[in-house]
Amino acid sequence: MMFIPLWKRVLVVVAVILSFAYCLPNFVSQDMRDAWEKNLPSWMPTKSVSLGLDLQGGSHLLLQADIDSVIKKHLDDAESFARGKIKSENISYKAISANSENVSVELKSEDDVSAMRKIFREADELLVIDAEGMVISASYDEKGLKSITDQTISQSIEVVSRRVNGTGTKEPIIQRQGDNRILVQLPGMNDPGRVKELLNKTAQLSFHLVSMTGEGLNVRTLPMREGQGQTLPINRRPLLTGEMLTNAQPTFQDGAPIVSFRLNSEGAKKFCDVTRDNVDKPFAVVLDGEIITAPRINEAICGGSAVITGRFTIQEANDLALLLRAGALPTSLSIVEERSVGPSLGSDSVEAGKIATIVAFLLIVAFMVFSYSLFGVFASVALFINMVLIIALLSMLQATLTLPGIAGIVLTMGMAVDANVLIFERIREEIRSGRSIISAMDTGYEKAMASIIDSNLTTLIAGVILYAVGTGPIKGFAVTMSIGIATSLFSAIMLTRLMLVVWLRTQKPKALPI
Image 1 (spheres, rainbow, N blue to C red):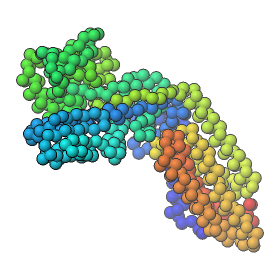
Image 2: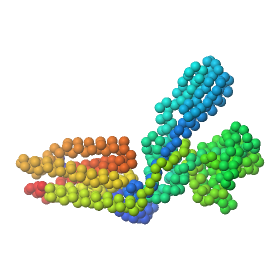
Image 3: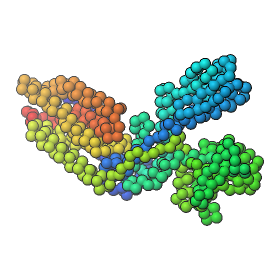
Image 4: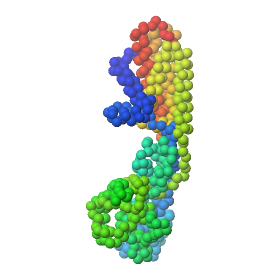
Protein backbone atom coordinates (compact mmCIF):
# COMPACT_ATOMS: atom_id res chain seq x y z
CA MET A 1 0.00 0.00 0.00
CA MET A 2 2.87 2.40 0.80
CA PHE A 3 4.41 1.77 -2.61
CA ILE A 4 3.35 4.48 -5.06
CA PRO A 5 3.89 3.84 -8.79
CA LEU A 6 5.91 6.42 -10.73
CA TRP A 7 2.93 7.55 -12.82
CA LYS A 8 0.95 8.37 -9.68
CA ARG A 9 3.83 10.41 -8.27
CA VAL A 10 4.11 12.35 -11.51
CA LEU A 11 0.34 12.88 -11.55
CA VAL A 12 0.37 14.32 -8.02
CA VAL A 13 3.31 16.63 -8.73
CA VAL A 14 1.80 17.88 -12.01
CA ALA A 15 -1.57 18.50 -10.32
CA VAL A 16 0.09 20.53 -7.58
CA ILE A 17 2.15 22.60 -10.06
CA LEU A 18 -0.92 23.32 -12.21
CA SER A 19 -2.94 24.28 -9.15
CA PHE A 20 -0.36 26.93 -8.21
CA ALA A 21 -0.31 28.17 -11.83
CA TYR A 22 -4.10 28.51 -12.01
CA CYS A 23 -4.20 30.06 -8.54
CA LEU A 24 -1.62 32.74 -9.36
CA PRO A 25 -3.91 35.13 -11.36
CA ASN A 26 -5.96 35.68 -8.19
CA PHE A 27 -3.00 37.39 -6.54
CA VAL A 28 -2.05 39.87 -9.27
CA SER A 29 -3.74 43.11 -10.35
CA GLN A 30 -6.53 43.32 -12.93
CA ASP A 31 -4.20 45.18 -15.30
CA MET A 32 -1.70 42.32 -15.09
CA ARG A 33 -4.44 39.75 -15.82
CA ASP A 34 -5.64 41.80 -18.81
CA ALA A 35 -2.08 41.91 -20.15
CA TRP A 36 -1.75 38.15 -19.72
CA GLU A 37 -4.99 37.54 -21.62
CA LYS A 38 -3.74 39.64 -24.53
CA ASN A 39 -0.21 38.27 -24.74
CA LEU A 40 -0.35 34.68 -23.46
CA PRO A 41 -1.78 31.70 -25.37
CA SER A 42 -5.46 30.92 -24.68
CA TRP A 43 -4.61 27.71 -22.82
CA MET A 44 -2.47 29.53 -20.26
CA PRO A 45 -4.09 30.27 -16.87
CA THR A 46 -5.21 33.93 -16.84
CA LYS A 47 -8.63 33.76 -15.15
CA SER A 48 -9.32 34.63 -11.53
CA VAL A 49 -12.19 33.61 -9.27
CA SER A 50 -15.38 35.51 -10.05
CA LEU A 51 -16.65 37.35 -6.98
CA GLY A 52 -20.36 37.38 -6.31
CA LEU A 53 -22.56 40.35 -5.63
CA ASP A 54 -22.02 40.19 -1.87
CA LEU A 55 -18.22 40.28 -2.25
CA GLN A 56 -17.62 42.98 -4.87
CA GLY A 57 -20.83 44.99 -4.63
CA GLY A 58 -23.34 45.59 -7.39
CA SER A 59 -27.05 45.53 -8.09
CA HIS A 60 -29.74 42.93 -7.48
CA LEU A 61 -32.97 42.97 -9.48
CA LEU A 62 -35.91 40.59 -9.20
CA LEU A 63 -38.18 40.73 -12.24
CA GLN A 64 -41.72 39.37 -12.51
CA ALA A 65 -43.14 38.31 -15.85
CA ASP A 66 -46.74 39.14 -16.72
CA ILE A 67 -47.86 35.59 -17.50
CA ASP A 68 -51.58 36.52 -17.51
CA SER A 69 -51.10 38.77 -20.54
CA VAL A 70 -49.29 35.97 -22.38
CA ILE A 71 -52.14 33.55 -21.72
CA LYS A 72 -54.66 36.19 -22.83
CA LYS A 73 -52.67 36.73 -26.04
CA HIS A 74 -52.66 32.98 -26.72
CA LEU A 75 -56.43 32.88 -26.29
CA ASP A 76 -56.88 35.97 -28.50
CA ASP A 77 -54.72 34.34 -31.17
CA ALA A 78 -56.83 31.19 -30.92
CA GLU A 79 -59.99 33.30 -31.35
CA SER A 80 -58.52 35.08 -34.37
CA PHE A 81 -57.48 31.74 -35.91
CA ALA A 82 -60.94 30.28 -35.23
CA ARG A 83 -62.71 33.24 -36.85
CA GLY A 84 -60.69 32.83 -40.02
CA LYS A 85 -61.28 29.07 -40.22
CA ILE A 86 -64.99 29.44 -39.46
CA LYS A 87 -65.31 31.90 -42.32
CA SER A 88 -63.31 29.79 -44.78
CA GLU A 89 -65.21 26.61 -43.93
CA ASN A 90 -68.63 28.31 -43.91
CA ILE A 91 -69.50 27.23 -40.36
CA SER A 92 -72.61 28.92 -39.00
CA TYR A 93 -72.35 30.40 -35.51
CA LYS A 94 -74.20 32.79 -33.22
CA ALA A 95 -71.29 34.24 -31.26
CA ILE A 96 -67.57 33.88 -30.67
CA SER A 97 -65.64 35.48 -27.84
CA ALA A 98 -62.43 35.26 -25.85
CA ASN A 99 -61.69 36.32 -22.28
CA SER A 100 -58.80 35.74 -19.89
CA GLU A 101 -59.86 32.13 -19.26
CA ASN A 102 -61.19 30.62 -22.48
CA VAL A 103 -62.40 30.99 -26.05
CA SER A 104 -65.98 29.99 -26.74
CA VAL A 105 -68.11 29.61 -29.85
CA GLU A 106 -71.88 29.19 -29.92
CA LEU A 107 -72.82 27.23 -33.04
CA LYS A 108 -76.12 27.09 -34.91
CA SER A 109 -75.90 23.43 -35.96
CA GLU A 110 -74.77 20.31 -34.10
CA ASP A 111 -73.23 19.08 -37.35
CA ASP A 112 -70.44 21.64 -36.92
CA VAL A 113 -69.39 20.55 -33.40
CA SER A 114 -66.71 18.09 -34.55
CA ALA A 115 -65.39 20.59 -37.12
CA MET A 116 -65.16 23.25 -34.39
CA ARG A 117 -63.24 20.88 -32.13
CA LYS A 118 -60.78 20.26 -34.95
CA ILE A 119 -60.34 24.01 -35.50
CA PHE A 120 -59.46 24.59 -31.83
CA ARG A 121 -56.98 21.70 -31.90
CA GLU A 122 -55.33 23.28 -34.94
CA ALA A 123 -55.25 26.65 -33.21
CA ASP A 124 -53.26 25.33 -30.25
CA GLU A 125 -52.62 21.71 -29.34
CA LEU A 126 -52.39 22.68 -25.67
CA LEU A 127 -56.04 23.77 -25.56
CA VAL A 128 -58.50 21.58 -23.67
CA ILE A 129 -61.85 21.53 -25.48
CA ASP A 130 -65.24 21.22 -23.75
CA ALA A 131 -68.71 21.08 -25.28
CA GLU A 132 -72.03 21.91 -23.66
CA GLY A 133 -74.74 21.56 -26.22
CA MET A 134 -74.04 24.02 -29.02
CA VAL A 135 -71.36 25.94 -27.09
CA ILE A 136 -67.75 24.83 -27.68
CA SER A 137 -65.12 26.30 -25.36
CA ALA A 138 -61.35 25.92 -25.24
CA SER A 139 -59.07 26.69 -22.29
CA TYR A 140 -55.72 25.71 -20.80
CA ASP A 141 -55.39 23.17 -18.00
CA GLU A 142 -52.51 23.15 -15.48
CA LYS A 143 -50.24 21.32 -17.90
CA GLY A 144 -50.90 23.87 -20.64
CA LEU A 145 -50.44 26.83 -18.30
CA LYS A 146 -47.14 25.39 -17.05
CA SER A 147 -45.93 24.87 -20.61
CA ILE A 148 -46.75 28.48 -21.56
CA THR A 149 -45.14 29.80 -18.36
CA ASP A 150 -41.95 27.75 -18.85
CA GLN A 151 -41.62 28.85 -22.46
CA THR A 152 -42.22 32.51 -21.57
CA ILE A 153 -39.68 32.53 -18.73
CA SER A 154 -37.09 30.65 -20.80
CA GLN A 155 -37.45 33.08 -23.71
CA SER A 156 -37.41 36.07 -21.34
CA ILE A 157 -34.17 34.88 -19.70
CA GLU A 158 -32.55 34.52 -23.12
CA VAL A 159 -33.58 38.03 -24.18
CA VAL A 160 -32.60 39.57 -20.81
CA SER A 161 -29.20 37.86 -21.07
CA ARG A 162 -28.59 39.30 -24.52
CA ARG A 163 -29.61 42.78 -23.41
CA VAL A 164 -27.54 42.77 -20.21
CA ASN A 165 -24.46 41.32 -21.95
CA GLY A 166 -24.85 43.93 -24.67
CA THR A 167 -24.26 46.71 -22.13
CA GLY A 168 -20.80 45.32 -21.35
CA THR A 169 -21.70 44.08 -17.87
CA LYS A 170 -19.18 41.44 -16.79
CA GLU A 171 -20.31 38.07 -15.48
CA PRO A 172 -23.98 38.83 -14.72
CA ILE A 173 -26.06 36.18 -12.97
CA ILE A 174 -29.43 35.67 -14.67
CA GLN A 175 -31.60 32.76 -13.58
CA ARG A 176 -35.18 31.73 -12.97
CA GLN A 177 -36.60 32.08 -9.47
CA GLY A 178 -39.92 30.51 -8.61
CA ASP A 179 -42.68 30.18 -11.21
CA ASN A 180 -42.72 33.57 -12.90
CA ARG A 181 -39.69 35.53 -11.69
CA ILE A 182 -36.18 36.16 -13.00
CA LEU A 183 -33.21 37.03 -10.80
CA VAL A 184 -30.68 39.44 -12.28
CA GLN A 185 -27.48 40.15 -10.36
CA LEU A 186 -24.99 42.65 -11.78
CA PRO A 187 -21.68 42.42 -9.86
CA GLY A 188 -19.69 45.63 -9.90
CA MET A 189 -22.62 47.77 -11.14
CA ASN A 190 -23.86 50.22 -8.54
CA ASP A 191 -26.08 52.30 -10.86
CA PRO A 192 -28.26 49.93 -12.90
CA GLY A 193 -30.38 52.75 -14.37
CA ARG A 194 -29.57 51.97 -18.00
CA VAL A 195 -30.09 48.22 -17.54
CA LYS A 196 -33.43 48.83 -15.81
CA GLU A 197 -34.52 51.05 -18.68
CA LEU A 198 -33.59 48.35 -21.20
CA LEU A 199 -35.40 45.65 -19.23
CA ASN A 200 -38.55 47.76 -18.86
CA LYS A 201 -39.09 47.66 -22.62
CA THR A 202 -40.53 44.64 -24.37
CA ALA A 203 -39.00 45.91 -27.67
CA GLN A 204 -41.88 44.73 -29.83
CA LEU A 205 -41.13 46.39 -33.16
CA SER A 206 -43.65 46.56 -35.99
CA PHE A 207 -44.19 48.49 -39.22
CA HIS A 208 -47.64 49.85 -40.12
CA LEU A 209 -49.16 51.93 -42.86
CA VAL A 210 -50.58 55.21 -41.61
CA SER A 211 -54.37 55.27 -41.94
CA MET A 212 -55.53 57.90 -44.37
CA THR A 213 -59.09 57.96 -42.98
CA GLY A 214 -58.28 57.68 -39.28
CA GLU A 215 -61.44 55.70 -38.61
CA GLY A 216 -62.62 52.09 -38.50
CA LEU A 217 -62.20 48.92 -36.46
CA ASN A 218 -58.85 48.18 -38.08
CA VAL A 219 -57.37 51.53 -37.06
CA ARG A 220 -55.60 52.37 -33.80
CA THR A 221 -54.25 55.71 -32.66
CA LEU A 222 -50.81 55.76 -31.02
CA PRO A 223 -48.70 58.53 -29.46
CA MET A 224 -45.67 59.80 -31.34
CA ARG A 225 -42.23 59.87 -29.79
CA GLU A 226 -41.50 63.26 -31.31
CA GLY A 227 -43.85 65.97 -30.18
CA GLN A 228 -45.64 65.74 -26.84
CA GLY A 229 -49.33 65.00 -27.12
CA GLN A 230 -49.20 64.25 -30.85
CA THR A 231 -50.87 61.05 -32.08
CA LEU A 232 -51.22 59.30 -35.40
CA PRO A 233 -53.80 56.77 -36.66
CA ILE A 234 -52.29 53.60 -38.12
CA ASN A 235 -53.61 50.37 -39.54
CA ARG A 236 -53.94 47.87 -36.70
CA ARG A 237 -52.48 44.98 -38.68
CA PRO A 238 -48.67 45.21 -39.00
CA LEU A 239 -47.05 44.69 -42.37
CA LEU A 240 -43.75 43.63 -40.83
CA THR A 241 -42.62 42.64 -37.32
CA GLY A 242 -39.29 42.76 -35.51
CA GLU A 243 -39.02 38.98 -35.70
CA MET A 244 -37.83 39.42 -39.29
CA LEU A 245 -34.79 41.49 -38.22
CA THR A 246 -31.41 39.78 -38.36
CA ASN A 247 -29.22 42.68 -37.22
CA ALA A 248 -29.37 46.28 -36.04
CA GLN A 249 -26.51 48.74 -35.51
CA PRO A 250 -26.24 52.42 -34.51
CA THR A 251 -24.75 54.65 -37.18
CA PHE A 252 -24.88 58.24 -38.46
CA GLN A 253 -26.69 59.94 -41.32
CA ASP A 254 -25.99 63.60 -42.09
CA GLY A 255 -24.26 63.81 -38.71
CA ALA A 256 -27.30 62.58 -36.78
CA PRO A 257 -27.50 59.23 -34.93
CA ILE A 258 -29.77 56.65 -36.59
CA VAL A 259 -30.26 52.90 -36.45
CA SER A 260 -29.67 50.73 -39.50
CA PHE A 261 -31.21 47.27 -39.67
CA ARG A 262 -31.21 44.25 -41.92
CA LEU A 263 -34.11 41.87 -42.59
CA ASN A 264 -34.10 38.17 -43.34
CA SER A 265 -35.00 36.97 -46.84
CA GLU A 266 -38.73 36.78 -46.10
CA GLY A 267 -38.75 40.21 -44.47
CA ALA A 268 -36.66 41.75 -47.27
CA LYS A 269 -39.09 40.53 -49.94
CA LYS A 270 -42.12 41.67 -47.97
CA PHE A 271 -40.56 45.07 -47.21
CA CYS A 272 -39.74 45.53 -50.88
CA ASP A 273 -43.30 44.68 -51.94
CA VAL A 274 -44.89 46.89 -49.29
CA THR A 275 -42.77 49.94 -50.11
CA ARG A 276 -43.24 49.42 -53.87
CA ASP A 277 -47.02 49.30 -53.48
CA ASN A 278 -47.22 52.30 -51.15
CA VAL A 279 -44.94 54.96 -52.65
CA ASP A 280 -45.75 58.49 -51.40
CA LYS A 281 -47.61 57.09 -48.38
CA PRO A 282 -46.47 57.52 -44.73
CA PHE A 283 -45.10 54.44 -43.03
CA ALA A 284 -45.05 54.20 -39.20
CA VAL A 285 -42.32 52.43 -37.19
CA VAL A 286 -43.84 51.38 -33.85
CA LEU A 287 -41.88 50.27 -30.79
CA ASP A 288 -43.80 49.15 -27.68
CA GLY A 289 -46.94 51.06 -28.59
CA GLU A 290 -45.16 54.29 -29.50
CA ILE A 291 -44.51 55.64 -33.00
CA ILE A 292 -40.78 56.28 -33.31
CA THR A 293 -40.94 57.77 -36.76
CA ALA A 294 -43.39 57.96 -39.65
CA PRO A 295 -41.50 58.87 -42.83
CA ARG A 296 -43.02 59.03 -46.28
CA ILE A 297 -42.06 56.22 -48.66
CA ASN A 298 -40.27 57.89 -51.56
CA GLU A 299 -39.37 54.74 -53.47
CA ALA A 300 -39.31 50.95 -53.18
CA ILE A 301 -36.77 49.80 -50.58
CA CYS A 302 -35.34 46.49 -51.68
CA GLY A 303 -32.20 44.62 -50.66
CA GLY A 304 -33.22 43.98 -47.05
CA SER A 305 -31.56 47.02 -45.46
CA ALA A 306 -33.14 50.22 -44.14
CA VAL A 307 -32.71 52.82 -41.42
CA ILE A 308 -34.78 54.17 -38.54
CA THR A 309 -34.53 57.89 -37.88
CA GLY A 310 -36.07 59.87 -35.06
CA ARG A 311 -33.86 62.57 -33.54
CA PHE A 312 -32.03 60.08 -31.36
CA THR A 313 -29.18 60.87 -29.04
CA ILE A 314 -26.13 58.62 -29.45
CA GLN A 315 -27.11 56.68 -26.30
CA GLU A 316 -30.70 56.24 -27.51
CA ALA A 317 -29.51 54.95 -30.88
CA ASN A 318 -27.17 52.49 -29.15
CA ASP A 319 -29.94 51.27 -26.83
CA LEU A 320 -32.50 50.90 -29.63
CA ALA A 321 -30.04 48.90 -31.74
CA LEU A 322 -29.27 46.71 -28.73
CA LEU A 323 -32.98 46.10 -28.06
CA LEU A 324 -33.63 45.17 -31.68
CA ARG A 325 -30.64 42.81 -31.79
CA ALA A 326 -31.62 41.12 -28.53
CA GLY A 327 -35.17 40.57 -29.73
CA ALA A 328 -38.54 41.25 -28.15
CA LEU A 329 -39.56 40.02 -24.76
CA PRO A 330 -42.60 37.74 -24.87
CA THR A 331 -44.19 39.83 -22.12
CA SER A 332 -43.51 42.80 -19.90
CA LEU A 333 -41.21 42.46 -16.88
CA SER A 334 -41.79 44.47 -13.73
CA ILE A 335 -39.18 45.04 -11.03
CA VAL A 336 -40.55 43.66 -7.75
CA GLU A 337 -37.32 43.87 -5.76
CA GLU A 338 -34.23 46.01 -6.12
CA ARG A 339 -31.23 46.48 -3.89
CA SER A 340 -27.62 47.52 -4.20
CA VAL A 341 -24.52 46.36 -2.35
CA GLY A 342 -21.82 49.01 -2.13
CA PRO A 343 -18.22 48.14 -3.04
CA SER A 344 -17.08 49.06 0.47
CA LEU A 345 -19.50 46.57 2.03
CA GLY A 346 -18.34 43.95 -0.47
CA SER A 347 -14.67 44.59 0.34
CA ASP A 348 -15.49 44.32 4.04
CA SER A 349 -17.01 40.91 3.37
CA VAL A 350 -13.89 39.84 1.47
CA GLU A 351 -11.65 40.94 4.32
CA ALA A 352 -13.85 39.19 6.87
CA GLY A 353 -13.72 36.04 4.75
CA LYS A 354 -9.93 36.24 4.53
CA ILE A 355 -9.60 36.65 8.28
CA ALA A 356 -11.97 33.74 8.93
CA THR A 357 -10.05 31.51 6.52
CA ILE A 358 -6.63 32.44 7.96
CA VAL A 359 -7.77 31.98 11.56
CA ALA A 360 -9.36 28.61 10.75
CA PHE A 361 -6.22 27.50 8.91
CA LEU A 362 -3.89 28.51 11.78
CA LEU A 363 -6.05 26.84 14.42
CA ILE A 364 -6.21 23.62 12.42
CA VAL A 365 -2.44 23.68 11.85
CA ALA A 366 -1.82 24.26 15.57
CA PHE A 367 -4.10 21.36 16.51
CA MET A 368 -2.56 18.97 13.96
CA VAL A 369 1.04 19.79 14.90
CA PHE A 370 0.25 19.54 18.62
CA SER A 371 -1.56 16.23 18.21
CA TYR A 372 0.58 14.49 15.58
CA SER A 373 3.97 16.23 15.60
CA LEU A 374 5.77 15.78 12.26
CA PHE A 375 2.80 13.98 10.75
CA GLY A 376 0.73 17.05 11.65
CA VAL A 377 3.20 19.20 9.69
CA PHE A 378 2.71 16.96 6.64
CA ALA A 379 -1.08 17.24 7.04
CA SER A 380 -0.80 21.06 7.33
CA VAL A 381 1.27 21.29 4.12
CA ALA A 382 -1.36 19.15 2.38
CA LEU A 383 -4.08 21.42 3.80
CA PHE A 384 -2.36 24.50 2.34
CA ILE A 385 -2.06 22.83 -1.06
CA ASN A 386 -5.71 21.79 -0.73
CA MET A 387 -6.64 25.47 -0.41
CA VAL A 388 -4.62 26.23 -3.53
CA LEU A 389 -6.41 23.41 -5.37
CA ILE A 390 -9.83 24.82 -4.42
CA ILE A 391 -8.97 28.33 -5.64
CA ALA A 392 -7.44 26.91 -8.84
CA LEU A 393 -10.56 24.85 -9.63
CA LEU A 394 -12.86 27.81 -8.92
CA SER A 395 -10.72 29.89 -11.32
CA MET A 396 -10.73 27.21 -14.03
CA LEU A 397 -14.50 26.71 -13.80
CA GLN A 398 -15.11 30.47 -13.52
CA ALA A 399 -17.42 29.69 -10.62
CA THR A 400 -18.83 32.64 -8.71
CA LEU A 401 -17.52 32.89 -5.14
CA THR A 402 -20.00 34.29 -2.63
CA LEU A 403 -19.88 34.81 1.13
CA PRO A 404 -21.61 31.44 1.74
CA GLY A 405 -19.02 29.99 -0.64
CA ILE A 406 -16.26 31.20 1.67
CA ALA A 407 -18.11 29.47 4.51
CA GLY A 408 -18.04 26.29 2.42
CA ILE A 409 -14.27 26.63 1.99
CA VAL A 410 -13.74 27.11 5.73
CA LEU A 411 -15.91 24.05 6.40
CA THR A 412 -13.94 21.88 3.97
CA MET A 413 -10.69 22.85 5.68
CA GLY A 414 -11.83 20.99 8.78
CA MET A 415 -13.10 18.12 6.66
CA ALA A 416 -9.78 17.99 4.77
CA VAL A 417 -7.79 17.10 7.89
CA ASP A 418 -10.52 14.77 9.12
CA ALA A 419 -9.27 12.09 6.73
CA ASN A 420 -5.71 12.51 8.04
CA VAL A 421 -6.95 12.27 11.63
CA LEU A 422 -8.63 8.94 10.86
CA ILE A 423 -5.47 7.63 9.20
CA PHE A 424 -3.08 8.85 11.89
CA GLU A 425 -5.22 7.48 14.73
CA ARG A 426 -5.39 4.13 12.99
CA ILE A 427 -1.59 4.12 12.56
CA ARG A 428 -1.21 4.82 16.29
CA GLU A 429 -3.41 1.84 17.12
CA GLU A 430 -1.39 -0.44 14.86
CA ILE A 431 1.90 0.77 16.43
CA ARG A 432 0.54 0.06 19.91
CA SER A 433 -0.47 -3.43 18.81
CA GLY A 434 3.18 -4.16 17.97
CA ARG A 435 3.30 -3.76 14.18
CA SER A 436 6.37 -2.45 12.37
CA ILE A 437 6.49 1.07 10.97
CA ILE A 438 5.78 0.06 7.37
CA SER A 439 3.11 -2.44 8.40
CA ALA A 440 1.41 0.07 10.73
CA MET A 441 1.26 2.76 8.06
CA ASP A 442 0.15 0.32 5.40
CA THR A 443 -2.63 -1.05 7.61
CA GLY A 444 -3.60 2.41 8.84
CA TYR A 445 -4.26 3.66 5.32
CA GLU A 446 -6.00 0.45 4.27
CA LYS A 447 -8.40 0.22 7.23
CA ALA A 448 -9.19 3.94 7.41
CA MET A 449 -10.04 4.18 3.71
CA ALA A 450 -13.60 2.84 4.02
CA SER A 451 -14.50 5.35 6.75
CA ILE A 452 -12.95 8.21 4.75
CA ILE A 453 -14.86 7.34 1.58
CA ASP A 454 -18.16 6.90 3.45
CA SER A 455 -17.96 10.20 5.33
CA ASN A 456 -16.95 12.24 2.28
CA LEU A 457 -19.42 10.55 -0.03
CA THR A 458 -22.38 11.27 2.27
CA THR A 459 -21.32 14.92 2.54
CA LEU A 460 -20.91 15.10 -1.25
CA ILE A 461 -24.46 13.76 -1.70
CA ALA A 462 -25.73 16.52 0.58
CA GLY A 463 -23.80 19.07 -1.49
CA VAL A 464 -25.28 17.79 -4.76
CA ILE A 465 -28.81 17.98 -3.31
CA LEU A 466 -28.21 21.53 -2.07
CA TYR A 467 -27.00 22.55 -5.53
CA ALA A 468 -29.95 20.86 -7.26
CA VAL A 469 -32.73 22.39 -5.15
CA GLY A 470 -31.05 25.55 -3.83
CA THR A 471 -30.74 28.98 -5.40
CA GLY A 472 -28.22 31.82 -5.22
CA PRO A 473 -26.10 31.66 -2.03
CA ILE A 474 -27.09 28.03 -1.35
CA LYS A 475 -25.66 27.00 -4.72
CA GLY A 476 -22.44 28.91 -3.97
CA PHE A 477 -22.05 27.08 -0.68
CA ALA A 478 -22.76 23.71 -2.34
CA VAL A 479 -20.23 24.32 -5.15
CA THR A 480 -17.32 25.24 -2.91
CA MET A 481 -18.13 22.47 -0.43
CA SER A 482 -18.30 19.84 -3.20
CA ILE A 483 -15.05 21.03 -4.78
CA GLY A 484 -13.45 21.05 -1.33
CA ILE A 485 -14.51 17.44 -0.70
CA ALA A 486 -12.91 16.31 -3.96
CA THR A 487 -9.66 18.19 -3.30
CA SER A 488 -9.48 17.05 0.34
CA LEU A 489 -9.71 13.42 -0.76
CA PHE A 490 -6.86 14.03 -3.19
CA SER A 491 -4.71 15.82 -0.60
CA ALA A 492 -5.31 13.24 2.16
CA ILE A 493 -5.13 10.03 0.16
CA MET A 494 -2.57 10.96 -2.50
CA LEU A 495 -0.58 14.01 -1.41
CA THR A 496 -0.05 13.28 2.30
CA ARG A 497 0.75 9.64 1.53
CA LEU A 498 3.34 10.69 -1.07
CA MET A 499 5.05 12.97 1.48
CA LEU A 500 5.07 10.17 4.06
CA VAL A 501 6.56 7.68 1.58
CA VAL A 502 9.32 10.15 0.59
CA TRP A 503 10.05 10.82 4.26
CA LEU A 504 10.21 7.09 5.09
CA ARG A 505 12.62 6.33 2.23
CA THR A 506 14.93 9.27 2.90
CA GLN A 507 14.98 9.24 6.72
CA LYS A 508 14.40 5.53 7.44
CA PRO A 509 13.13 6.26 10.98
CA LYS A 510 13.20 3.61 13.72
CA ALA A 511 10.10 5.09 15.37
CA LEU A 512 7.18 7.17 14.15
CA PRO A 513 6.87 10.75 15.50
CA ILE A 514 3.15 10.48 16.01
